[in-house]
Length: 267
Image (cartoon, rainbow, N blue to C red; front, side, top):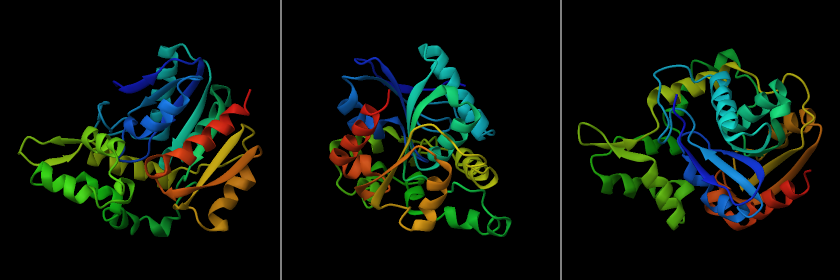
């Protein structure tokens, strides 16, 4: 495995930023620039994404966590603060209970599917995720211009800021047949969803300081969705922010401040 990553290293406190499905490390550009004075920040492309390796199989949480622990070893980190988005929020919870010594705090940005998915949903869910709007960024598209036109209609690109444009350009490539599509692979998509459905995020309570960021137009809008986190995260802060599932792209100012204030309270 080769893991590509972005690095901001003016500060000293280790901070690891994990993107969600079909995204890449550049989604954290605004937050990285905001926190750079105080933190040594690394944002990897998760396996199957961006410029990192894209194996045909093995997208388990165990393998993803092993990638991250190997990366931390390379950086000389024994522990770090962690910010995670969407499916990597579940990864953060699993990592925190499996090896809590690695993590000083966890920030969960609108996490998804914290529980194991019931068996009766497994037959219909693969049909559902193929039409989830954000996965339309996978393509294929006949031309780059067609790709950009369709991508700009998605929620995470609604402002089409310079950072959003950079995220899009970093995540797309021309295929051997001349079409354009995402660097995120179908094998990674299917493997990640299989892991999300099969592995519960919470088995035992977690004592690590945790921040749950709940965007106003995010996935987690109902109390029943938030309750598992309130029950299992014993040192939890919950903050609402403007924006949708990608507040770091659509409303970065308040998002960055929320993360900074939480991290500043940690030792």
